[in-house]
Length: 501
Image 1 (cartoon, rainbow, N blue to C red):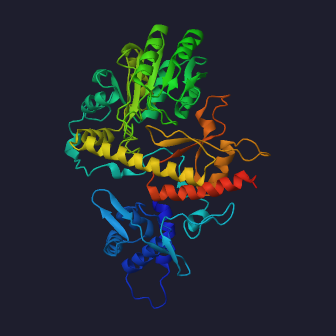
Image 2 (tube, rainbow, N blue to C red; image 1 turned 60 degrees about the horizontal axis):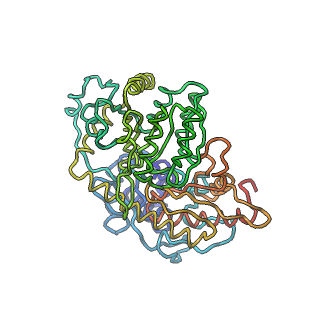
Image 3 (tube, rainbow, N blue to C red; image 1 turned 180 degrees about the vertical axis):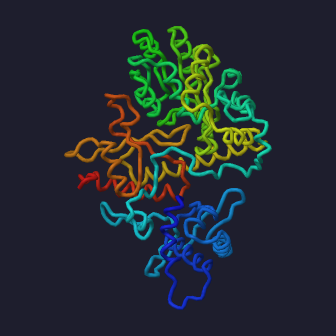
């Protein structure tokens, strides 16, 4: 949880002691936190701010915060997780009138179209904030990271010593070469970037001139569309199915449009579909034979979810001279660790290196050394497997709740990734088809953010208008509350409501 928002919830109780108050600040802080947990304002699995950050925000010492959290832990209201943080536990909720409200996180009964559940989130909504953000397909926090011991001495052997290695840390490049495209990515042709989004922008910067064409799927990643637009490129939509480009249509588009490159995702964002090996092989052949590049986004490639196994296939083994691979650690570790990569054939690699120097000279040496420690850790693969298993549970939880509460909506259960690609139901005979942008705006008014489908289509696309993307990366209690809010927003929208009236 954001520390400023948390301090807003806690601070009023803490700064107004009762008359003749004799208890310590730590005891009053513990009481304030307990009230928030029991009222339902703090959901189960909410990660509290760090002791230091909360102390600074509230103007109290770290010892005062530690004392209050220790008291709550002893009472079973929060759980201290070594190396991860302090998390709210599920307890019986009590509403402001002292009545038992059931387990915190349980879905409330509907109270009318447009209503917001009380008492959960009441203060946040009064401040105009989003309660649950399903728009961002992200790892919720840094709890996937183990405790690491990184000292200044670990940075003394960075080459060059000043930290401005524009290609990246040599040891990290060796480790990432395995991540990027197994068996096809020599470290000397791997460039470390500040996340995959920078990698996509470097590709566009290095390759595009105004008016150049880029082949994209009818539903695609908006970050690539933004990069293409920034450097004057023109996206051209190619017929595709839920597994990506249709091979024959792709080959025809390569011959007709002579694109500079085509953009593909072996694990698709937003649909969560995973491409078959034969599909990637066919695209590689068409790109190679047509004299174009295939830019392959592998950011989600390691998130093929149980019972399926991965990682997703790559075109690189079939056409290494025509394939550029882009990836990131953001979906398997944490988005705050800004480490990504691009692997490219010569002479494309040299042009990417020049674009990198134009962009920021070099990625953070500290982030890179943290990434080395994480990738080299002997438990790294086990942690990733656990995260994939947890994501599968969260996916099934969200899918099941949506099927129960919003039966007019439809989607295909994703095999990989972190989101559902949902088609909204019809608003009614008079109102006609739903509009994802309109509904997203209304949903935000109800406290939940979603991504409207329109951002996932190139200009003029009609395949995305009635769609939204929902992330299932959050813990189950948060997803449960999100569905309650979505159901209320949909009831208001289907009845003819808008975000403006």
